[in-house]
Length: 114
Image 1 (tube, rainbow, N blue to C red):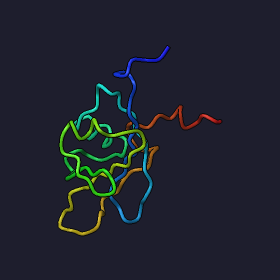
Image 2: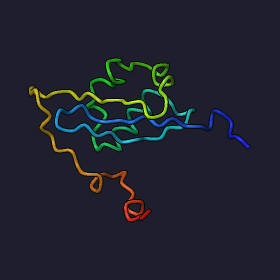
Image 3: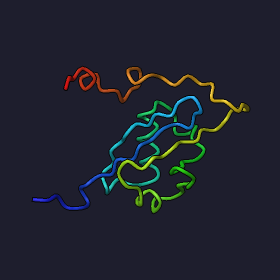
Image 4: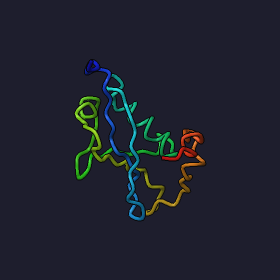
């Protein structure tokens, strides 16, 4: 039996805008949790950055996401980029921790073999 539509989640692919790093991570959000603030919080937690550092959220290639309605239109694997505030510099110089150093990291999942 199919699940009700409101229980099905979206899986945007998220990354930090960085000319040296092009990789995305997938995050899962339940349909009823699709909001600008929730996308921001989950993305920042997974990427190991503070939400206060995010200046903009962009759906690639060139659309700014500004409100909950914009977030609800996202579909699975759409690419979303967090644009961070620059501290008087044109380059991101702050250290971004590896996946194993982030508080959201699941060490049990990392040891799984397929």
